[in-house]
Length: 253
Image 1 (cartoon, helix red, strand yellow):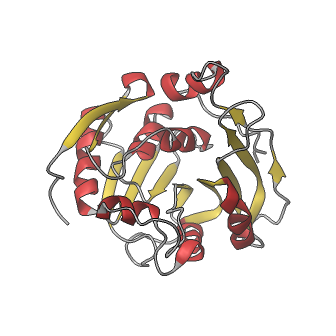
Image 2 (image 1 turned 90 degrees about the horizontal axis):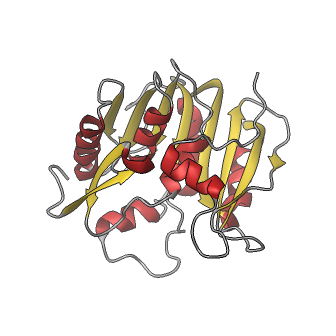
């Protein structure tokens, strides 16, 4: 698919720092890509890949938070890539953020072992499970392809430099699957639950693991997103609106 979706909205993230045009219907960026980008332990001068970039929300949030980082996004949907490129220009960081059309699981599009960081929000629904989203763009973004989660994670690890960090966000009930696929290939990181409220079970979790490490993974207490009144907690607000990093407590070496 080429061009732009017929109907789009112009939104902002990080308190207006990121300009985000996205489809009015279908899969739309919410807080997951913002939290994902906040968790990536990137530094100025390092390179990062957003695998399954959509309209560029996570890639742009990371680049805004870490001036000097070079960020690439890969996305299968050409219409979303067109929007992502526009968003990079509108945000004022097109000189160090780029997007390409391609399938994460197809080799040869990007050079192997070429990124210091890979961040990703993989499709989270098992193929054939639950109700299928009627919108084709949303279905493509949320339902695993024929290769499933294993193919996606294999591709991400293959694009990471040795010692690079893979950071992903996924459903909390799929984290055991994620860890099983990473075992023996990436470790020494953390599982970081995202709790909708105090005493409520996590629906999402962030996983960060270092390629080539055999060290065990640690589980943190996580971040509480909402307070008793339903609004964001001060900690969540600092991340979502003020571009503060999400400290996972990762070892640095």
